[in-house]
Length: 442
Image 1 (cartoon, rainbow, N blue to C red):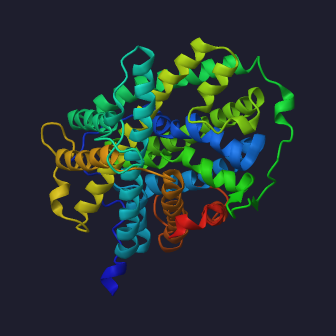
Image 2 (image 1 turned 60 degrees about the vertical axis):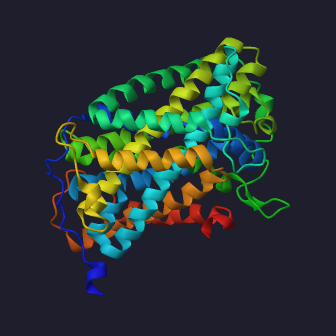
Image 3 (image 1 turned 90 degrees about the vertical axis):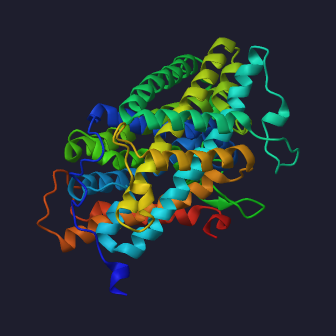
């Protein structure tokens, strides 16, 4: 029984030299932005506004962002003091022992793996829209797997983009970071275009009523609605900042750069989300936003076809960066778990040539490509959310535990106000779990 709760030595992997240290604080910030801004801002904003929060979706983003801030501060403290490869997994191992770490490790593997496959399916639809615009659409049987209502053969673009990213990650993390930086720039340019156009087309009457569903309630079918329920959904928009902590071994100065990357990317993206969601509900009545691409939809309603086309391009780019960063994080989590002996050591092998975990990258890529190509996905945002929130609860709890049992541990970054903020992190993330539909708890 004692082995189940055996804890990892603090700083056990912080100075591991298997992986190349090439990432600066700026690289890590862009890594976080690349992972965070994607499906949430381009897809979920409209869904949450139309069905759960109304114009008060702005407050949903504030609530979700606050919960993430507590978790981000906890990640930053543990990344600077505990170290280790594997995000919430490594921190749980150091704080709570092997059994909890094994559970949260598999939780992260499923979270990242399913997220990449799900985003790839969404990406394929936008990619085919772009092909359709130039008169070269793919046939339906290459856009759907065999297990949907109108079956096809395979979702070829979804599987294909994952295999392309697999090749990129095999080449090396610096090459991946350079591509991510370029795509983040395109994505931010896209958002800037929307803000610039929407700013001069706001109709204040669209913000009334501001809170049509209140803070929390249930609809006729018993599904949670309101600002807090909306916060549980748009929380998916923040999934990804924790991926920065998996890069601790490849950071040039991990104890300084990783906390900067985590906090800077989260703060930046929270501000962007609040601005975009406010403008989106200001230019289009909230009940008209339950569409696959609400930002593009809003621009087309304004007659800005050129801007709509540009945003559609940005969506494809944005979703690509999300897949790239989450795929990267997945391989580093598996690498950390394998090194610790909780799964086969086969996955701990790092290529001497590229200094990347090639075996793990290939196996993950093949499995996720198969999922994206053949498996239908429904309600994935909520399923991913509950796993992520559970990880955040453990990370915040880990800060409290490590402070109590290792008070003299060097902490280059330390959460202010004692244990107040990690306690608030546990409570707020736990509350968001409670506000999710009951099916996601199964």
